[in-house]
Amino acid sequence: PRASVWSRDATRLIFSEGAGILEWAREGGVRTLYTSGSPLRDLSIVWQGSSGGARGVAAVPRGDADIWALPLDPETLVPTGPALQLARSTLTENHPRLSPDGTRFAFVSTRGGSSEVWVADASGENPRQVSNLGSFISGYPRWSPDGRRIAFHARVPNDANLYVVDADAGVPRKVAPGTAPVWSPDGRYLYAVLGAFGLFRVAVDNGIVEPLFEGQFPVVTLDGSRIIYAGR
Image (cartoon, rainbow, N blue to C red; front, side, top):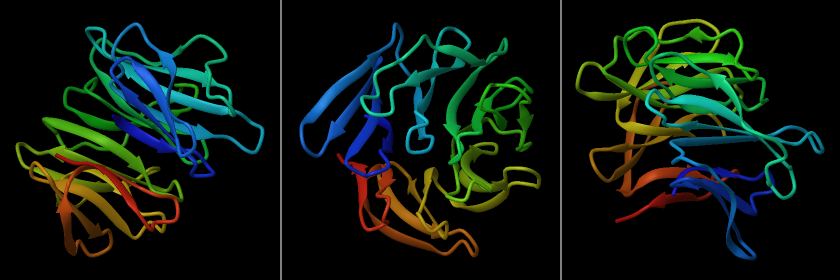
């Protein structure tokens, strides 16, 4: 399972696996919500208001991978219409992530010659490059809870490090070695992976690292009290 996202009431966990979007409920187990014609590389979902519906974006690798949006019913998470293409170029777009308010999404693209983080409107318009590291690989862009900053990992040229950049302007700041960052609900820490299976958290402001335990792909609960992760 990858790209796990909690529902607002923290009773359901939505994630991608292969070509499917699945839901795990505390009461009821796992069910399939959507099946794509191709494997899904990433998934991001945001709920918009009490009755405003939900939006999902995912990357589908088809030669040069592009980013599509899939409208979802906010209660059942069943698709309510066809997928719409949001980000496309002759090179690769992947790792989409919607902002907390659903108005923008961050993604990774090689359209500029290196793997960098970009931000676009939720409609796919006005794409703008926000990192310029000359990265061999960038990935896992994650919005801070207040929607002002984006954390991501990048290899420049070979060492994997965590970076944080202002979503509107600024220069990416290296925080610590690691990959696959996720924010704590209060925006003070990043939880990430160092090496093959070492979970840790790092203070965003000063880069102090606190090793935790073995695991991968952390997801922090909405109240910050627990971590869901992949084990060996």
